[in-house]
Length: 208
Ligand code: OGA
Ligand code: MN
Image 1 (cartoon, helix red, strand yellow):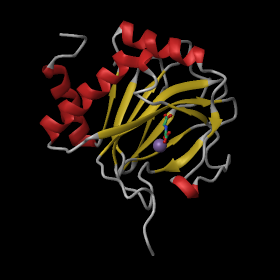
Image 2 (cartoon, protein in one colour; image 1 turned 60 degrees about the horizontal axis):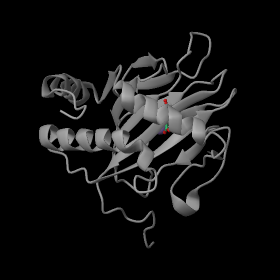
Image 3 (cartoon, rainbow, N blue to C red; image 1 turned 90 degrees about the vertical axis):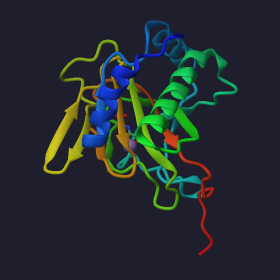
């Protein structure tokens, strides 16, 4: 069935997501799809731009808060990623069906943390733009080893969960509830990061 995973697997992941607000899924993309993503990453390695914080006109650059660089993707333009876009649609369909969500959009970027970069503890929903419902991070680090740093930390009540950014590991979490941070990376650390959205958005601006 065109690379889709079984509903049984999805049910396990979804149960975990609804119990804990996050789930870690190893080997998330099939081989062809993962290859598409890494080929695309290699082709666009020069196109990353320093990331900011906040939506639209509040997009401030502060490397003390976040030091990564991003390359925003466009599903219409970036058709070489067709298998990945199919996976995103599959994920949205399953979550809508099984979790009674009303996801109807997504946004994704490739991300690079150069040595020394980190991202301080934060929530993914912007203060004035709350349409990000589920965060998706897929790691692309084939040779990651302990000591390379760049682990994702998830703050789960009193507990800190430490997640290594190993190749083809996916973390899904509630964008509105799960506080998290990226520890300082000692090597180049790559990921494909995005958000499943409920639109319409407030266009990042409220009249005040
Ligand atoms: C983010 C983020 C986590 C990671 O981009 O908002 O928190 O592990 N990423 O890259
Ligand atoms: Mn985040």
